[in-house]
Image (cartoon, each protein chain N blue to C red):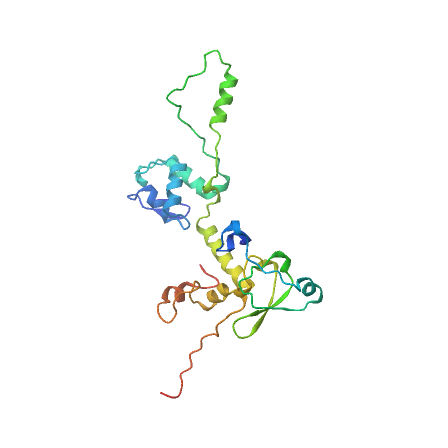
Length: 93
Length: 166
């Protein structure tokens, strides 16, 4: 099942999706230059498909390549913000 | 004990509540189903006739292809019947117009049992395939919706899988 743009957002439908107009969008499409962004809450639009983003997770920029299936989601969903929990018992007790 | 589409419906239970035993049917949908199939609110499974049970089974087998229920609107208190000389074609036309189903039919998109489970599995697989946060949490077997994990994640640890429902 493909969730549509309207269904995905917790935002009211009449407002339309929240997105950011990236200035170097056309250049990114043609030259495959990754777009560095801290806009994690930006909705992925159909014209973003094929672009490489470097999404901020608080510390680093995670590479995200947009595909057709990702269209209704936000950029931040693909850049995890927490390190995976590993239980390592420290020697100092 | 009546068996409908692989699910046993206990005789002593109210029909409206027995329908919730299907995966994908809750109280609201069960109430709508009873209205659609014209099953009385207080009737139990043992009170249903064989015809009603076959109607129920055939409806649930494919809700989208079931014929729509005819509307049977009541006449207003000031209704004047048409004169006896009206041609029968006009009367028949009026009847068909009045009994046309109107509005949305929420039961058309009803998905039960195997289909319902498949929808859930496909949604989880979609999240995993695109590599989203939700997909990763399902793969790790941890809570997806921001619940606490320092304590109390027992249900998520038990049930959250990429291939949920086997």
